[in-house]
Amino acid sequence: MSKDSLIQQLINAFRCLPGVGPKSAQRMTFYLLQRDRQGGRHLAESLVAAMSRVGNCRRCRTLSEKEVCAICENPKRDASQLCVVESPADMAAIEHGTGYRGQFFVLGGHLSPLDGIGPDELGVALLAQRLSEGEVGEVIIATGSTVEGQATAHYISELVHEKGIRVTRIAQGVPLGGELEFVDSSTLDHAIGERQSME
Image 1: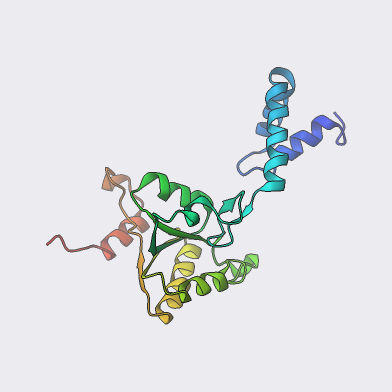
Image 2 (image 1 turned 60 degrees about the vertical axis):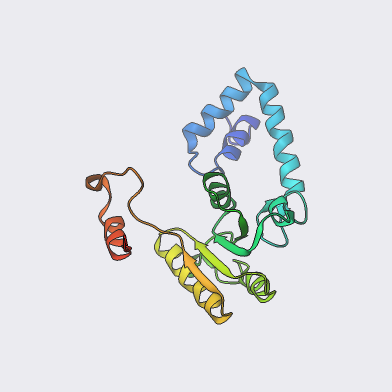
């Protein structure tokens, strides 16, 4: 099969997805072409529509078809709480997996100077503007526990402290139902260091 063939172009297109290598991309391509052409057409139409009509919410930066997303528009959400997350996927996990009913702010990544990702790329100016509006009384930082996530959390917490707003960080450590012998040492170290009183 030539490198310019439509089949090879489709295989290469699938490889842009995270975790999809050459074999997986080839398997998906052959499946759609051999067994589900209608599904492939639907996938193509959905991709074209999403790529042209989905943008970012102007208030929280999550993915949205409208200028302001449904969560930011909802007057029943608690505007005094603002949860700062790295990605729309993190936002969805908190929204669907917890009882949290405040507002969100999506950074779109984490600080990574080596990759050219600084405060400007994370929308920190928009976050600072939002904090200056006077509605937010607590910022909950829910970035990852990676080195970059921790550095981002520290940077955001400094910004929030400057505004005189309470800042908290989500708890991290041993998962509920987890067996200590199977937890990695850095997670255990963090859990011991961040232990809380049971009184």
